[in-house]
Image (cartoon, rainbow, N blue to C red; front, side):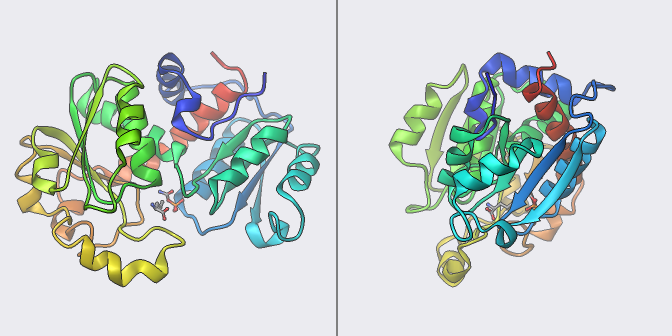
Length: 298
Ligand code: CP
Ligand code: NVA
């Protein structure tokens, strides 16, 4: 059966642990030897493009970067026509899309694995790198509190899924109107041995946390809402005052790109407890681990 990674929950808890193990193995078989990988981007990227391209190369394959406008998903031709055609050239299809439904439709008709490289719904490759980095820095996440302060969005959803599946207690601090709905909290609580709670104050959210995450207040595609969001998110920036409510020495994490002075203060992201560069570098290892998994390495 073809496996895909559209969301973290496409993996079960054992598979998630296996992917994290594969990500750290010194050598992996060249499962993409002689095969292409189509990487379609409807939005800009630094980390995702470079880490995926290099992961494909390290597994023996050949990445083909493709701008969204070139193929025009549902504009020049349908998602299904693009997918079926490209699957004849490539062993792997991956896409960064505005609407999550496009990667779902790709996976529904693709005979080769499909990877979501960020949608409006989720960012599973980022979630993998996030938990990999926290495990390297803090050890097992079982029973640890992981806080996320900011927008309930693609990044926080994938982070929360991965953390709960690994046994962490996730603590969200999101402004009203930009928070996780109750049905999402219930779904997440049912995912694993961890738990999830939500407050509407950053200081409450980070209490007892070993790790504090945030993300931009204005995601790609929401630029028109920026002024309104900056007003609503006032008080949700991660600065040293907020970090003082977390455990002493708590780590700071951000998927990047970061906007200093908005969701995070320079003193925190550029400070001694920031792990954002290690986190970004782990995007490569996480991508290599999950591609190896999708191609059958166990
Ligand atoms: N974190 C992340 O996905 O970065 P890029 O948008 O640069 O790929
Ligand atoms: N939430 C952000 C993440 C960027 C990597 C966005 O979707 O733009």
